[in-house]
Image (tube, rainbow, N blue to C red; front, side):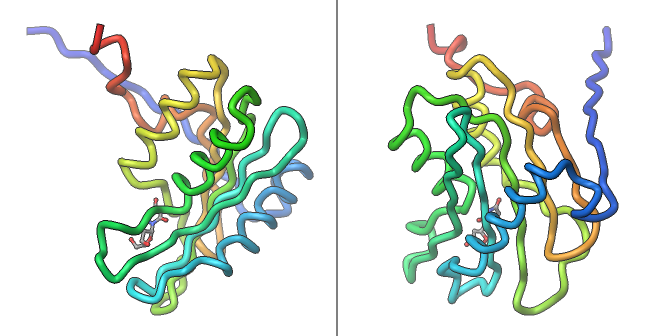
Length: 161
Ligand code: THU
């Protein structure tokens, strides 16, 4: 038996003011998008902002539904919108933030597993990494330089051929 160790690397920033200027602005756009979320059932609002290589920012937020599984997370709303509007533009960075109406989220809130899989599809498609910055409402911000650090052992198209 051999064991295989997987190391993931995250950088942690203590506050938004420690982020590079362009990412501070991107996080601001994610916060604005978060407040426009439609989350009457969970009362948990998530915002995403994607920086595209052409300078455009595409935002998304969670959209819920009375038939719960019919809703969609902020990350996928944003990344599918980017894919629909700018299919040939690489995504360089993604900023994510969450705010719960029932508790103050003080630690970085990572994307769910399904969103990680969706982000991985686009990172593999564009053949360049997407830096992912994620936070709660306040406090520290974590940065993954690539989705590979959030989703090791990804299932990708190579298994389909
Ligand atoms: N949610 C997101 O938008 N992104 C995630 O990565 C985790 C969860 C949304 C889905 C649902 O509307 C609410 O947060 C509670 O799960």
